[in-house]
Image (cartoon, rainbow, N blue to C red):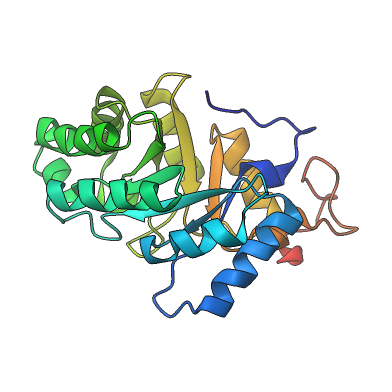
Length: 242
């Protein structure tokens, strides 16, 4: 069941605190986990090799572990994605953020893209939710809409904008389009370029149910320039807190 943000809600509960850089060290991941616990973020989002480490660091907390799959290209075989997702869940992940087969979507082979997603969903069924990364910067609006339909038909729980490694990031227009393309029971995750409170709230108001960002602390730390609902006094930019 997806959660919906209201101005009275805690922003932290909608944030996947993210660190996917290839240069991430154990110290960096430890810091990520401590920050997630301290600020009560919904989850940490990491590469699969860090899942078991995060599980130890987050023991006893409510913070979930999200692991990426087929990341960042989506061009791996379905068998590889299935193994990667299942292995991450065995290590402690409760959410899988998988990249769909972008080339199949561009080719119009939506059934194949959907089958790829369905195999991952089945591999972690009843053990983890699956978020499908569209990499919207490579797709036109029709392809985005069809990709959302393919993901929902495959049993995915969320559709997500971007990896943060490809072309473009989350936009208000894409969030509105994706929200209109899936049912209310399917979540929409905005990810890529969300670095301040103002942008985060814009995404949530546009229909996102979750945010993927490495700037979570800046987003949840209000300043005197920010109102409780995340807006700013006239003439001031919310980006000043970042």
